[in-house]
Image (cartoon, rainbow, N blue to C red; front, side, top):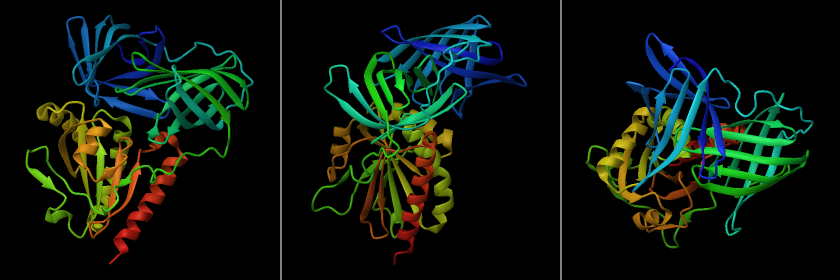
Length: 388
């Protein structure tokens, strides 16, 4: 397996190919991979070889690539381990191919940079999701993301060619492909969104610099009559941890609902770790509640430990024993009303009262939205710390 930039594809059940790029680096005989999506470089360290095969363990999300290694090409499968089965997609890659969709783009006069009001619709029209597209387009290179009420699609990269839009990403946990026709500078139609092995939705968009989403603090709340939450779950070492433990008393406490399978949770954790390192001495504590794909403690522990080690998480991560379904979260904390998505962050004041609940997370792939969240969030925490 040779060093350099590779072009890879994953094939969906409908035969659509989801392309992505990665760089194989050979540093003093130690090989590692950087997955390339827009400005993001996601490092993959666990690569092993046996005979003519290569095994690539993705850093999170409990997935891996197994492929035949012919030096300049790879062919095999991407395997995503779910709770009771595996999702498998054909994987192929070739070194020396730095292009993503086309070796040479056809010129396009379309200017799609900016904000777009977007609607995703299931093929049976039963499910509709409102989103905001944010795109940057320079010399045919397209980047950006879609923001939804429950999070964003992270770093997307692609191109505009012959008045058609192409975007994709692969982060080890999710494989996405977006295509569409650009009617003019203000209208996108006939969109298709491919997700994983079989997910397909349609989408359309209209340029709207004032496009907005519901307030992330308005989607989840406590049931009437409740002002506090309570729980006891085992930490990774098996010892029980409760919100009533002394370490959390008279502190501003953040309760993070997460899963090792969740890309937006990864982005939130990457932010919360340095935040905690700055704010812990001021009187802030964080507890992470992990809802995994399986209720098996040992398997869940292994996956959450990978998350902990990846980001050097200094705060407690608890294995709830509940699966990553909204109804399971509702069962684990029955005082919650209308749990919507992972991640969710509960902000608790020094008296133990829930002050805010934030649904989803817009990560660094969203640009100014991420910056604005950080500024607003840290101002909120500063105000709570100042309370007597």
